[in-house]
Image (cartoon, rainbow, N blue to C red; front, top):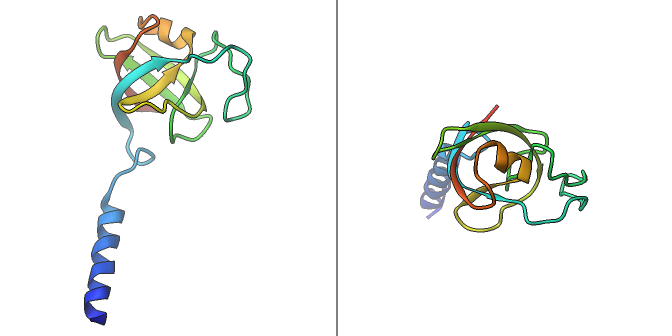
Length: 118
């Protein structure tokens, strides 16, 4: 019985250690969206949201991380700084300010993107 427990713990540990989280990976793909909060509201990092700044929200990347966001439809890219948490809608990987969305030609909608952690 004890042997089976130790084997199970060893196997579970090997599975856990073998997984790759985004913090280890350098690239992520998914859907980008545009912030819907108003300018001046506080972000999770404590900074004020500025629609004209090249900042973004990501669920797990550390605040201050620089990320290159590339629009898969047109190849345009922009470098943004993570200052907030989100998006909290399945399938979306990043929320961009209007300045960031405009820089990659995304407008007010959604766009398929690739994120490269710098």
